[in-house]
Image (cartoon, rainbow over all chains, first blue to last red; front, side, top):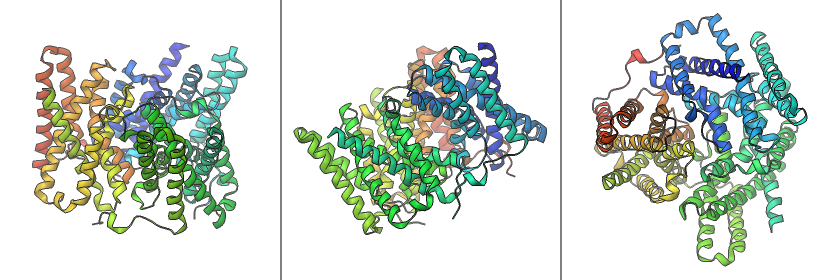
Length: 209
Length: 209
Length: 209
């Protein structure tokens, strides 16, 4: 199980860096900006989570994630035309969704383990882990953030983390099973949103004036 | 006294979430964005303060504030047309000013108690507590921040916190009285700015080129 | 040596505040905004570094830096026309480059001393110390950040910090000499970029679409 988690988080880090770079590549960013924004997308959410939790940033103990994010960002810079092929790009989106699912559940679990502001804070920190890096990237790149788009990205993560915290409270003996199920639920919803191009229905959006 | 402080911070949290949501509602934000940005407006400033102070985020020990901010943001989403009525909106602005006064003085006191970088840091952290959440919201929502408007919002807070730190140093036996007076001073200035629609005079603004 | 470092960081703080204010003065900022953004430019990078390192913000133990940044920002507000004279402004740019060199090396050393995520994290934190304040300022002021410009600013810092960490690892007995040399290398590259108006070559910039 540990092993699976490790491999998913490796894949997730790479996918976050690649999609992070692709999201800003059309703005004429130099290689330094690409590396910084790719790394921020990949490890920024976990960093904010660890700062709020008051624990050392996870990448200070596992620099591997920084190297992976750097390598993936560099590769995306060099082989941009490869990654922007519709099929490759779509695969990256699915991997990114898998990453968001893992990072969300991991983040919620880390806060829950530290007994941090139960029950609401673990959900918040799960969401922060999954979307914080992308928010930082968009703010630094001058892009509209996820919060102002109507993408179905953070909502599946939030629902999955809520479910997971409920499960940890009421069915602690199924900790592992519920982690896997909640991750699958997040990924399933996100994959559906990618596949059918779904976004938040108008009824749930404030009117522009 | 503790009781009064508790009730004011409840009112302040609600007012911050409501005005926070109203500030961005005209941009077509979905319910998820509304909840996140409302909560960030209400608890973001205190969170940044606690991170800089190196103490656990206040809401990890008092999740009530998160729930209040969530409920107030949700209510604002549902009943937007109620809250945008001129009279209701104006009342919310006054409550928000009361909140800024309380949060500023509370933040300065927390830093002072921890003996953190006296005398200048407590003033900075008081101001951060009062305006940090709004700054985060505006950056994430792509709005011009308070620092670039010429509103009389942060200036009363800064003056009040300066006065308060002076009082804590020179008249420590009147700690309570000076807290109340400084809060009233901040609120009075802010209320005057709302009532007479005052903003920073031109002489104190750099020339645009 | 300690003494030289102290005086350079005083000069650097002042230069960062002055260039920080000049960068946003043309947008019509009020005195409060000027002071806040000047201080953030000068001490923001070190603050983010200290938060990630999990140590108290350097200015809580040395409030002098806040006072200096406040005074320099105020002076820039009052005497803007003095500082915008081409020759004075150019000198400030060179001092700012010296500051970035010192802050970068100082930041990398602080992380290295704390054994924080060697070898990659000290480089990241050196860069954060040097450019973090400017990034915060630009985000709060609604300006394009350094990461989206093609300036040769962060790249010299990054190269210098990489070299310095290599030197600390392989030639620990020359710690002092390598710090000085790496600072000079950063400053030399930055000065060359200012003098010849160099920026990142097109080959290293993604194509805009």
